[in-house]
Length: 403
Image 1 (tube, one colour):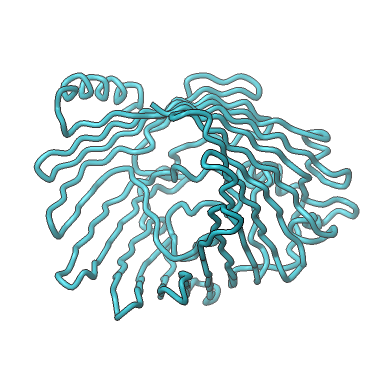
Image 2 (cartoon, rainbow, N blue to C red):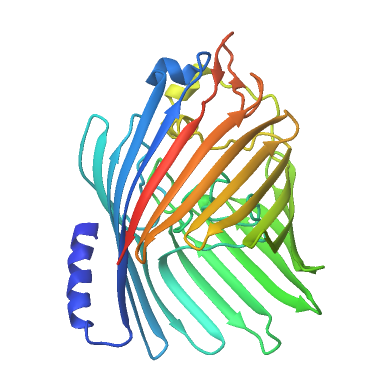
């Protein structure tokens, strides 16, 4: 069913449930812009010039209804994009086609979509949901190897909503407080359009307690690869420690990923502060990887990702850290470091959020990659002398209004 027809059904449902105390309706409008620069030796400068601008307007309407254990959730998005490196949301790999392009011309696109659409039932001990929904697992703060379904890029600024996927989700709560979660993410083959088990994700995760220690045990098959995971977390001297170990067995080899972190909150100079530091070992890393310029033209998704300044995670060893400083009750400042320690190179971020009113928020970020040519953040070397896959400093700004 097309999103336009589903929107009509949502309006009808909203009218029918308007007087129901179990009905909730809210949403937001966001306007954001990203300005990027490209160094002289970057192949992206040849494609886009010395700089590029990405602007987006987003209206999101969230409908929730619950009654006698039953629940229904539908989130509608109307998105306008202006970009020289468009990477449009699409449902080519998802079970349901819930995204429609309304119109497009040159670098502009208007589309609408349903980012959430699920029906479920909850009892005192069990939860069952089917449809488009979001799932987040693991103890990673910046890097999330146990988060198998749509993990955030570590450099993402706006992490309010994670993209939904079509799945069957279940959870059972034991008397001890432990719980078992299961998920079957159903996907289509991007070429044939048919439902294909080779691109699906089937996962079971057990979450338990042993004294002060919390632990997770994960068993999954994702994109036909076997995945085993073990996560742990506990309080350590007033701080919180978390860690995940994930082993992925593929047809080519067996890869290990590991993440461990510490987070702590304190007061300094009368200001609330919280900090986090994390180490990530990426078994899939390929230090010194090179790209053929011709391959970029044949891979628009990769090119768009690079042009937006998003991370590769090509290296083996990463170190990340942040400090959240509450400058005033309305203003938060957060410096962030994402470093490939093997290069070495890094991405420095200075993010800020300011509450303009009870329902308006400003979110901004200055992003500066550092490192010599030939490193992940300084510029990955191409198979063409003198050209690198690199971005310069960038600015992100967003105003959000909630209703």
